[in-house]
Amino acid sequence: MKASDSLTFATTKKVTGWRLFLKTIVARAYPRVIGQQRELSWVFFEVFLPMLAVSAYVFVYRAIGAPEDYVGFVVVGGAMTAFWMNILWSMSSQLYWEKETGNLGLYIMAPNSLMAILLGMAIGGLVATALRAVAIIVLGSLLFHVQYSVSSFTQLLAVFFLAMTALYGMGMMSASFFLLLSREAWHIANLAQEPVYLASGFYFPIKSFNFWVAAAASLIPLTLGLDAMRQLIFPSGAALGFLNVTIEITILSLLCVIFLVGAKFLLDYMEKLAIREGRITESRR
Amino acid sequence: MSNYAVETKDLGRVYKIRGNKKERQERKELVALEDVNLTVERGELFGLLGPNGAGKTTLIKILTTLLAPTSGWARVATHDVNLNPHLVRPRINMVSGGESSGYGLLTVRENLWMFSQFYGMDSKEANQRITELLTLVDLQDRMNTKSSDLSTGLRQKMNIVRGFLTDPEVLFLDEPTLGLDVGASRDVRKLIREWMDADKNRTLLLTTHYMVEAEELCDRVAIINKGRVLACDTPANLKRNLQRDAIFEIETSPLNGLKHSIFAEQAEVKKAALTEIEGGARLELILKEESALATVINILTHKNIKVQRLSKRESTLEDVFMELVGQRMEDIEKGGAE
Image 1 (cartoon, rainbow over the protein chains, first blue to last red):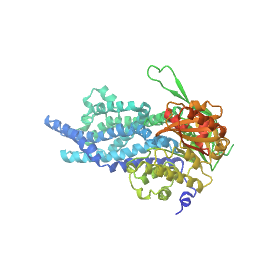
Image 2 (image 1 turned 60 degrees about the vertical axis):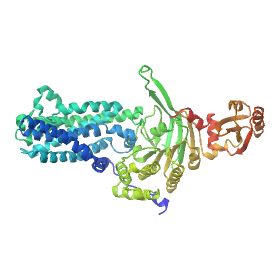
Image 3 (image 1 turned 135 degrees about the horizontal axis):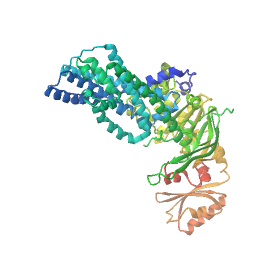
Image 4 (image 1 turned 45 degrees about the horizontal axis):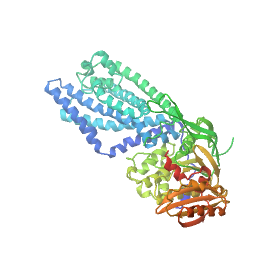
């Protein structure tokens, strides 16, 4: 084939509007759903290592003779930490990385919506992390003989969906926020990691906290999501729950709206600032 | 409204510089672009030639809607880049030299497909075009290689394919051969020329600080330094203005502390540049008349400096740059990077 044949393109039909929005989501989710599975080291770092923390708590609860449901609480909490790690290190810091590699400029310059890019990142991250979470649940349940008793599948699905939407909405919002903070965001991510493990009750029911501490911790969607899921899948969950599941679903719905609207607002602000000041798309390399 | 592919009027960009903690109160300013007036015709391969820090990348960023101008305006494909970026973006694409865009875990094909989707291309058509373009740049056997495993040159070929893939009306290439070896640079230049020749409606704006690249590729060139456009014409016309002058290169024994200013101060010498080479020095002179060479030789003889080689040559864009700026581009770049 001659060079001129390859370089003479027939007029290309390109979609716009919502079709472009959807195409962008799928394309940006692709590196996370497909690409991230290629490095098999994830099995060690994202399944095996969290399992060590889960095991430690299980052995402590068994040693002190805590109710057997606590073992299940820990396994579910361990699975949900995968989502928190994904939010902290892959969602929040992602736009900063995109800037450093030069992708952010290309994303802004393309005719797509930056919101679609963020949604693609979020959905891709959610799918990839769900694989890790399921692996932890299956492994933990088999190792520690966890018994589940789901009281309402519909509510369980609703809680999981809402908790993930709110959580990834928060991740989308913090992606712009971290980008604005630039390298200082690293310190915030480090700072947020361990306290959130504690505040969200990954390894124990948050009812153990003072009401106001638990209420403040509920700003992180995983807190209520986890609490509601435990209430719905363990016989003693309801007695150890922080709030009624219906109330938790309502709050999670509100958090979804707040974080998604916040993400859109901050993203628009970040794009305007990037174009006005020229700083944000400038790689420091 | 005009039908230019690119048009700028009194375009300027001033950066506010944040100082250190002590200087926070003072708002320093850096003028990156000043009163830039340019027009690029449809179908033209236009070059922006200037040293690092001249303002080339700033201009490209404004034209690709990534940066707002602080004065004047710019239009690309007839649309104002600042007021209507959403109308400009579907019509353009950009590739920068040395960029590491895309994701290392994805293959070459997957990376290119992903970017095609951001422009709304049909997946099937995108994949077909990716195969054709990769074949053209001899990357077809690396189609399923992870992009992190590519060399710099191969990665840059992939980036250029990304730019061509969406068939933009106006393509911006910012230093496309930066960091590439001679062979890879030649391949990239050939590809650029072929892409332009394949469709006369395409417009390409290229920035470079390689004179040969500008001379070989561009229909017209704008010479830019310190944010200002100093000249804009075809390479032939730019050089023609220097044809009246005599351009000499003299290689000598070591100059023993002799400065180039002693030559530049002579009335008949328009410009003089000095480079230290192994075993001596190379003096490049633009003389108003050939007879002025005698004065230069006299100075060298008087200082006991031997002339080892003397040649007269045709003017190049390097000479045009030296004539306009007073320094060679290489010397400016040694003085400070962008």
